[in-house]
Image 1 (spheres, rainbow, N blue to C red):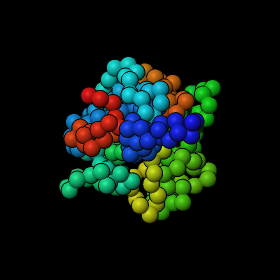
Image 2 (spheres, helix red, strand yellow):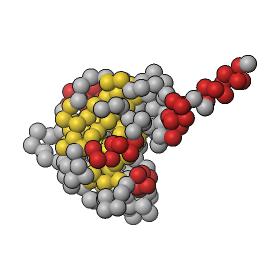
Image 3 (tube, helix red, strand yellow):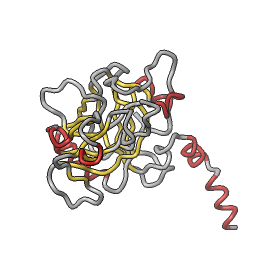
Image 4 (tube, rainbow, N blue to C red):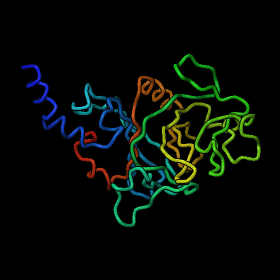
Length: 235
């Protein structure tokens, strides 16, 4: 009897649909949804959502806030390019676009010390490598390890990295599909980012709290939302 009930559960419409959603979204129970109006927008809305199980409907966790994204807009990450349409951009290194897709949110970081599990304190020498010629491409490391000849973001010298979260963005040196994707503090005078998501500092702190037990970042232009109908929160 137990095996019959399990089989019915696994083949229920809600479960089957959840399994058809792209990972890591399909199994997520916490979501940070960033929605841009178009592929060329440099601003977006950001909102948090939760659900009790991967088959349950999403519920809003607070209201939407304003975010900055890539100065050139949005482009599909290669891992999700199959969801794109003809003429829609695909992410490459240095294009100043935020990658569209679904990614696990990684550890928090910042200039100040913290007791958060896995927290990375950004100190002198902390660098995120954006040089495809380096074996450390798309990794946070130190200048002591990679040297000063390697191209990278010297994070301890960049004010908006005083608080942030890493994004587990899948790319490699051969793919040259962009690197060092973060959620970080928004500079008041900024009009866009180099490919990250930027929000006001209190919102970064809230996201650090929200993501501590695991969360997924979804970045999508509004025209693509219907391609994931049933996977994302209802409008």
